Amino acid sequence: MSQHGTSPSAEEARELLARAEGIGTTATNAAGWPTAMVFNSLAIIGSMMMIGFHIVAHTGYGAQLMAMSVAAWAMITALTWTFMMRTTKTGFSKRFATSLIAYFVLYGAAITTGALAFPNGSLEFYISAAVVLAAVGVAAAFRELRA
Image 1 (cartoon, rainbow, N blue to C red):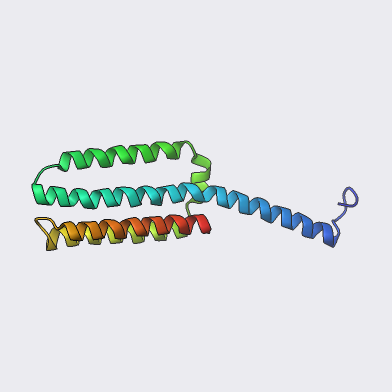
Image 2: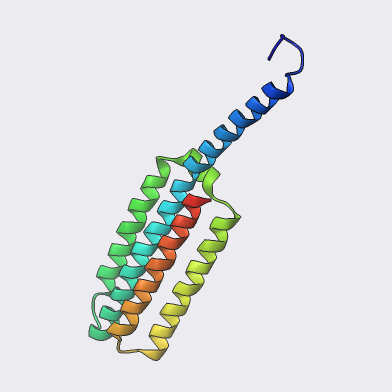
């Protein structure tokens, strides 16, 4: 500013606004990666679960191993959130909630279809479901990072 206690000139105001916008963009970008990590984790665990569901449906065993692997992955993901509490709180938005709901609706549809249409398992179906869930999870992660 030109003098202490007076209003900035038009040029100084534009400079200050540009600097504030840059700081806001940096803060928003930093807050996006924890939410992207959530979707990457969902993509990985969703794909693993689809293949696990096929194994359990086809062979009749492995449910305990599948439950333990999901629990381990969930604990690892939850542990990483504790390292970034401030950015995690900032990053969750309405866009995140919409993507999360869409992912879980698709996940529920895949589980329901697999259980009802293929009670003895179908490798083709579960691999296709795993690929679709992984693609949706990764797309949601990129959506969060680009926002």
